[in-house]
Image (tube, rainbow, N blue to C red; front, top):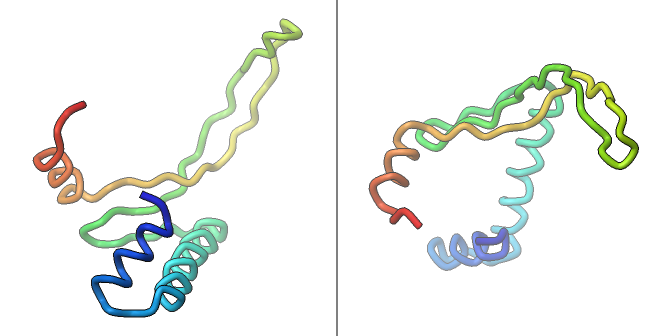
Length: 96
């Protein structure tokens, strides 16, 4: 499902114009991004949490030059689904 598909479904269900729904969805995503960039997690009860995870420093390999490199510690965004979300997916979808 793409962002356009999400906008179309919400527009259809609520009877709103696609342009208004698209602006709302893009504003939501921008606010989540801004919050994470500012160091704040975003919690959506019953859906999940957008959190910042810290990756430790590690040693990597450049296989083309056969050398080792240090990858510094860094933060990455992550999504942690809520328990009810996970249970819904477990019970309502087939294993592929």
